[in-house]
Image 1: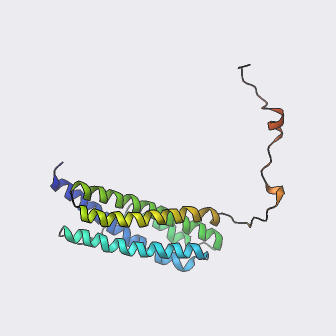
Image 2: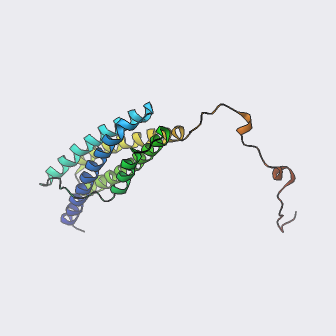
Length: 187
């Protein structure tokens, strides 16, 4: 594959990333006022800031190739964005936060994967300075990933844990008496 083909693929990927970024920023702006959890709200605000930075980097990279962002559909992000729009209509605030956290995680995963692909194209085309800028963006996306992944389990606790010992895991009687079925292997 020659450099012209790689450049063509890079431009196509940047167009997809720019369209996905536009869709992501719209759904993040729509979900943000509906969040009740303070930590999730701060995380989505951080994600919005990273998305704004993504948009400027995508425009900068496209401009370097003599292109402008096109208004193409963001097919990879569209189903996730639709789930985000639906999450804003959820009446239960805890379930709404869980759904918004899930949508944010999926959006972040897509953007991280897309930008890692762009960085790979840039490295192969020996555009090292541009790839370094994209690497800084992927580092921010990875830190956002850690934040979202540690936040989601706490959002999933719909009932407060009152340390009630009756709700703890108790092994069944089978553990004491052994399994009901035995294997054919005997020692």
